[in-house]
Every structure is written in structure tokens, then in C-alpha cells.
Image (cartoon, rainbow, N blue to C red; front, side):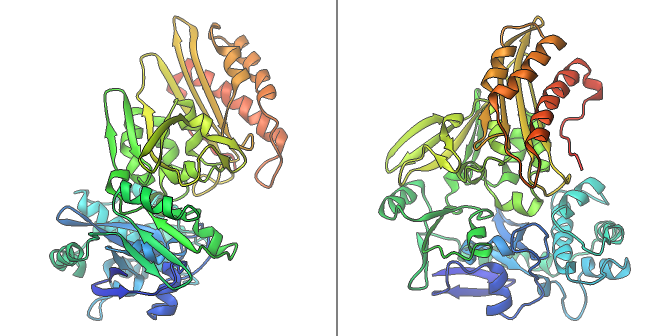
Length: 484
């Protein structure tokens, strides 16, 4: 059984199919068709909804792609769809702004934009920010695509909604909503069971370890932004899932004297502050990691665990010398992240073993770290090449070099020959050219629809040259690049 709020209505579900997405739940089970399916892959934002969660005595609102969210993950939360915004016959201020600014054309994408604007308005108010912030607006809307190219009036609507914000029914009911969410907060392992399929929802790491040992065939569900594609795109059934989103110990970010420890179930948007403070380029790349909806849902552990060769985080973490802590039953082991990836979609993880946390070393003196992402589109796109450079340079000599790439091999991989060409050498253009030549020894990339093998190798070399030039002239630095 799972329980959640559908706006303010308590829903108790006993036998739903755990493979059911929130999108289809809204449209087919509760008669709320305002939320649209545009792509079923989290790329267009037409299906955007807002989920409210307890944050102390307040409700924190986040946008999610309902097409990639399994209904079991709603347990203990509040779901708000576009139908819930109109109140007592009056449009919500974000809806009215879209009307006033002519922000809707064909209208198909409009509900998703409205929900992103709603969350933007709420979160800016909660942070104490007043007025219009274009950068925050562009980030909030980057995951919503308008096929009619109507972005200017939508941005105008965002400005009106943020500058002319008025208290709404959600503000008036917040205390009651907090009380409702506290009443349904998970207190024991829950299960959603449709007979032939089930999803288990543990609350502790120990419970997760026991459940996984008893069900080694289960698929671990965190954000689901990758796993859900098996259902929505490949039409496969997932008989057993274990949802890790209620395990608080796996959602913590702790900064120690030597490292940043990040629970594997921590949403990417919750990793941002700690990683960006220590490594600004990591923060810059996270701004371009898919969309805000995906970052609110996807996890750092999931981005590692799916073992994609084009995942954005692994090359950066490998270059930084990150470790992962793996757990099986009561036993844990630490493993260098670079040793976790063995072959395409093949990892060192054992049966019933899971990633518990990621440990990222803190920055050192004289350390130069840069990250670059090449993609066809600036926002909400997958890398053709992702590069991370981590060097310690002292007295003009490279004392240490760790360089990693995504999109260049079947796994995220260090550039060993390139590192060897740099290590112990003077930091000057000649050694950079030798290191660029060495990249051809490290990688034999493939051609696909994102880029040719020739483009990948040449741009990998050019990114090393770019890194060198930026360190020589930091005032002209441009860290994260997109080629259109």
C-alpha cells in the first residue's frame, strides 16, 4: 500500500501496477488529462508536474517529468497537476500570466510550462528572492520545449508571474498540507503489489540490503530517469523494483576535512551546492546536466550505476579520484570509480550489491580542474564528448595528471597515455601537443548520430588545448562549451 496527496486529496493505493507512470495515473486513473505526453523520455517537458515534499515545517516544490516517474515514488508526497492550479473559478497567477502575455500557441506544451513556472514562482518566494531573475527562469524552463517557438512570450509570462506574485491557495493551506504529509510520512517498509509485479520501499540501508539479498533479480529504483525508459520506450515489464528514495542515509551530503560524501540516492540538484563550492566547473556542468526536472529526480548514484559511456558525472568524478562505497548485506567495500566500469554496461558490482555513497576528494593546493561538455544543444542534451582535466602544477611542472573522458570509449575512461605525456613535464605548448597526440593511443572512438569518430578525437584534443589556454589566460576562460 502507498499513500500520497493528490493536491489535497488523500489517495491510498493497494494494487496499482508498479510499472505505471504518474503521467498515465493522472490521465487514465483519476481523469486529469491536462498533463500531456510529448516524448515519453523526459526530453520535452510537456508532462511536467510538481511534487511537494516536507522540508521541516514547509513544503518544498519540485518539477518532475511524470512520464519517467513511477507511481510508487509518490508515497508520502504531494502531487500537483495543472488542473489543481485554478481555484474558485480564478486562474492561478502563472496561468493568468500565460494568458496576458500570449504564451500559449498550439497549447500542447502549455501545461508543462505552467507547472515549471509555478515551481519557479514558489521556490523564488521560499528563498526570499523578489522580482525577475532571467538566469533562474532559463534554468527552470530549459526542460520545456515549445515546438511553435514561442519562448519570448513565455519568458514574459515568467517575469509577470514572479514580479506580480500573489498569495494563493497553496500558501493558505500550507500548514494543513504539512500536517497531512506528516500523517502519511513512511514509517515502515511499504509495498505496492499488483499480483505479478511489485515494488518494495525500504526506509533504511540495512532494510535495503536485506531486501536486495532476498530479491537479487530486483531493479533498484532511485530517480528512475533511466530505468523508466525500459517501460516507456522499450515496453518491457519490470517484475520487481526496490525504491531507495525514502532512505535518508543515502540522500545526505556531508563535507569533511578531506572529502565530500554523497549518498547514492541524492538527487543531482541536491549535490550541486557542495560540488560547485569545491569545484566550480562541476557546478557549471550540472547546470547543463539534462533539465531541472531530471536533476530534481535523477541521482548521482544512478548516473554511475547505469554505466552509460556518455553519462556526464563519471568522467568528472574519475578525474577527481572519486571512490564509491559498495554494500552487500552487512559488508561494504570501497572501490576507485575508474575500476567500477569494466565494459559497455558491465561493472564490478556483484549480485545484490549496491552503491551506498560516493566519496569525492576535496581540492588541493595548486590543483587545476576543468570540465567541458560538447553537445548539439546547450540545454537538455546528451554529450557527444565530455572531458575532465585535473592537474597539479607546481613551479611550471605537472606533478600530477588525471584526465578522463566520456563518449570516447565503451566506458568512461582515463586517458593513461595522455597523462603519462604530461606527468613530470614542463607546462608549455610543446608538451600539450605531445599529450594531444597521445590521446589517439588512448581512444578509438565510434561514430554515431551524435558525432563521428574523427570529430570526437579532434575535439578531445582541442579541449586539452583549450584547458591549457584557459590556465594561461584565465580572464578569457569559458569553461563549459556547446557546439551547435
